[in-house]
Structures are given as structure tokens and as C-alpha cells.
Length: 511
Ligand SMILES: Cc1cc2nc3c(=O)[nH]c(=O)nc-3n(C[C@H](O)[C@H](O)[C@H](O)COP(=O)(O)OP(=O)(O)OC[C@H]3O[C@@H](n4cnc5c(N)ncnc54)[C@H](O)[C@@H]3O)c2cc1C
View (cartoon, rainbow, N blue to C red):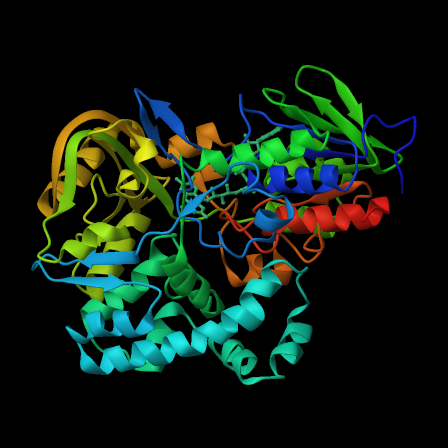
């Protein structure tokens, strides 16, 4: 397959979020003629930072779990284009209502000492669990994030070959709660803390998603912030793309795909322009790609049923972003909690967490009793002026709540909780971001679905978004998919965009 005089570009990429940017930059740097189309006034998607009166608010992604292992960082020379990560000394702190705290870092022995304040047995269990998770990450989870997914039986055969693989296969069938039972954790405060790592991302604690636990625990405890704000990462990828000759059109939504003889041959924009290319890579969600842009008439029965059955995430996020004049510190007796990337507060026990999540799922909460808080300026003074702080409060929330009515009371409940656990200066700027706001800003995140679709066993791995498209190519010639709804999934992993570029290069016959 090659571009010729009938084609304006070798590849057109739809959507300038992290995955679209990464796919475009790899292709452009490999010599392909690339056009990236973005609906919003700027590229970045979930890598967003808005500046209000000198405060940089990261309205969407802020925790970069794969910062040091993402191939794009090295391959696209992102540090050369200005990307800098900052890694706080502690990954997470749990502040309990009785004034006790528990600090987690990427040092399992130090974390075990924190856990020992609550349970000696659980401190031992934690080190056991960490030691079994680490080889799963090194040998399987991290490398496989950047390889096309295998059919489940093939993957099982691969994992049978060593102890780490066998253990991963074993926990894959378990839920997060089952894994804690299996390792023998017994203290309710420790279990609440450990379950908060998957729960903060809206994952169902009772679904058999156990293979994700090493990623959500160990990688979160290695997570970094982007110096200057998350948008600096998208700027770095953007610069690498443009430097390699890629063309970016922002404020230029794709409106439909051009199909000739059953093959996708280009894109028509909302303004009526047409661009032709032998490959079109969509990073939008399955409904947008296959129904809105392509059209149901081009879907066979199998693809149509897979797309119509696509499930959005049940849980989204509510954000409250504060600009503060003066200082910020937690009221804990342990000063080290100020050095944690994220501090969780409001809940005490595992039962509290389950009942909080049940309340979220009911859609009937008008406030929250569980928040997690990050103070980016603690680690990166460039995110506000001297003497000012930015504070990012997040709470797992339901899209179905009546946000038009409850946003002020919900924000107030976040502030009340924060004041209970922290001393802070005067709030001079305040900005909310509800699940409805998320959907309005990023249409890819329908119903506030931050990963473009639920994480269920049937929407993960080889089945994401369906086994018909998880290899990036779709049953429709000329159309590829590479956004968060495709393996390995959402968040700033850079996986779908990397795999999208890899498959596109093979199809275009370039290295
Ligand atoms: C509140 C919030 C907090 C989050 N926190 C984190 C975090 O801390 N860490 C983390 O790893 N992840 C986080 N995420 C998730 C992460 O942001 C997403 O999973 C990730 O951005 C998905 O990347 P993507 O490139 O696939 O899609 P997106 O980032 O959704 O980008 C898709 C792009 O396509 C554009 N687009 C839409 N329609 C069209 C069209 N018709 N034509 C052209 N362009 C179009 C959109 O404007 C957008 O720029 C968070 C998300 C939210 C909302």
C-alpha cells in the first residue's frame, strides 16, 4: 500500500489526544505524510492544562503511571522537545478520620512499616504481594502493553512458561477484593487503602479484573507529574510531529469518512473539506468511529452488534480545582504526607469504601464523603505564581446524577472534607469539572467515560473494542482504530497510539 498522486497524505489521524498525537508523530518521523485532525481549538485531549489568572489547572489527566516506561518518551525524543517529569517521594497517603495516616511509596519495605501500624500480618502480606506483582509487571504487563493483544488461550499458554506468568493467570480470574482475601489481608483500614488504588479509577472491585492490580498499585506508586502541567506532554509530542513534517489541523472536526467500493479512502471535515489517504486512523470512541463517521450501512452484523453493545463506564470523576493564596498542608501529625502525590481522605474502613461506591452508583449522592487530593505546586512551583498553590480535588462520581442542580453542594462537600483534613490559605479561584463537563469538552468520553468505555472482561485485552478490531485493523479496509477504546485501553499509557503507528507502518511498507 502506498500513497500516490490520488492521495493527499499517507495517513490521516482523527483525534489529537495522546494516542492520536503519538500515532501521528511516529508515522511522520518514519517519513509518512501525515495529517492530524482535531475537533477542539488545541490538541491534547485528556492531556489538558487550562491557565486561569496564573493558576494551571490540569482538568483531566495528571497522574502519569507509565512515564518512565512508555516507548514514545524515548522514541519520539520527548525530553528533547521539553517534556520533564517530576516524581514525588511518596505515591499516596491515606488520612483517616481518627487522625492516623498510612503512607505508600515504591519501597515495599517502607510501606510495610506504615502498614505495620495497623497490622503486623498485613505488613508481611504486603511485601509478599508486591514481590509477586513486580515480576508480573516486568515480564508481562509492561512489555505486553506495547504489543498487539493475543487471543486468551495463546496468552495463557505464554504465561504457563514461568512462575510470574502462572501467578498472573491465577489472579486474572479474581476480583480486587478476592486478591486481598487470597493474600490474607485482614485489617479493614489497610484493605480500604489497598482497594482505593483501583477504585479511584472507577473500577468495579468485584469484577474479575485482577490482572490489572499490579498496574494500578505498583505503577501508581511510581507515578509522575508533568512539569508545567500535563499539557506540556502534548506540546512535546506536537512539536516532535510538526518538526518531522506532520500537518495538524485543529478546530477541524472530522464529519464523515469517504468510502469507495467498501474501502475508506479519506475524511470529510465539518467544514466540507476532503482529504484523501490510503489509511485513516480513528482515535475516537467506537460509536463515533463506526456509527457517526463511517455509517452503519458499512458494518456487517458482527461488527454492528459489537458496537451497539459497547458499555460506557458506570463511574466517572468530579473535579474541583482551587487556586490558593498562601500555603497548604495536611493536618496530619506526620509531615511526610505533604510529600505524597495523592492524599485520600474521608473514609476509614473497607465497608465505608463499598458503601460509598454503592452510593455513587445509585446516582443519588448530592455530595461526597471520599476525595483524593493532589497539590501540584508542592512538587512543581511553575504551576502557580510565587506564594500561590493549585489544589486538585477529585471524587469518583456518577454521570447520571443531576449535575445542573447539585454541582454547588457537591463542590461544597469536597471543600468541607478538605478543610477537615488540611490547612489552606485563601481560595482565590475555584473551578468545577463534572462528568457532564468532561463529556462536553471531550466528546470521546461519552457519559464522562474517561477510558472511552468500561473495563469489563469482555471489553479488555483481545476483546477491546471487539476481537474484530483489537489488532488495530478493522474489517473495513483502509480504516484503523487506535484510541483509548482499543487495547491496551485508556489513560496516558501511549499504548493504542504506539500500536496504531506500528500497524500503519507495516501496511504502508515503511519502517
Ligand atoms: C477528569 C479526568 C481525569 C483523568 N485523570 C487521568 C490521570 O490522572 N492519569 C491518566 O493516565 N489518565 C487520566 N484520565 C484518562 C485519560 O485522559 C484518557 O484515557 C486519555 O486522554 C485517552 O486518550 P485518547 O488519545 O485515546 O483520547 P482523548 O484524550 O479523548 O482524545 C481524543 C481527541 O479526539 C478529539 N475529537 C473528538 N471528536 C473529533 C472529531 N470528530 N474530529 C477530530 N477530533 C475529534 C477530541 O477533541 C480529543 O482531543 C483522566 C480523564 C479525565 C476526564
